[in-house]
Image (cartoon, rainbow, N blue to C red; front, side):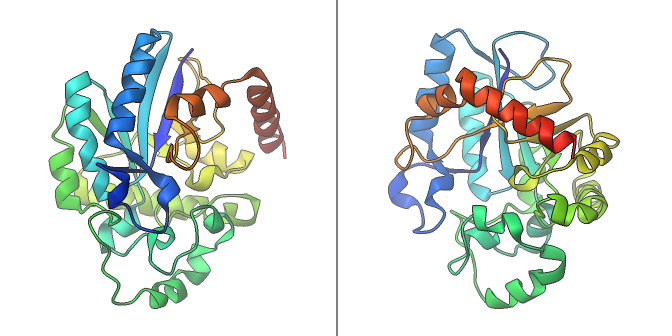
Length: 270
């Protein structure tokens, strides 16, 4: 069984995290425990293109500065990982809206039209300087990160626009602006694209697969080596939900996998 895990924010201790967006944070001790338990079960940590069975791939979405904390763990356990960037915030240094002091939750932005309303939203955050705990990485920091032999950089769009049916008209802008930003500032052409809030339609998926080797969702199912759509398992703060390995096990129960397969079928046949 090949599984792909999605993380957002890392912290050394839960005492350090802000009052908002706490569900997005996972501590380094919890992460190490998960790695060791999955290894004891016979899983091997590998890249997405590894053809082997029983592999685990690790990804990070958005591009938080705190993702830099993973490199020491990656080196210690020889774990390749994928960091997928929402380019606008990396480029401008603007705070991520869902982690700003006056922001809504990550899930609330599933129905937000960034192309129509972001400047209005940005005005609400004028003068706000995000702390290192929640700020985006800079391109200089990403340049240093990309020197690691274990990390690969991917695209997570430009504004973080969900590409549900209501907003699928933005798919080319999200793709093209995001890719251009990474090419101009890091000199890379990303191979992978992760969907903001996991939202997509058949048309969105068809368009993205023309430009990327694989597209990553958050529907929480295992994959095969030949799959070009990877349905990741999203992991969140164990203090709010449950231990990380329990979160994984819950997502892999047969009933949940069946429900997600039906959901994927419906999205791809709308």
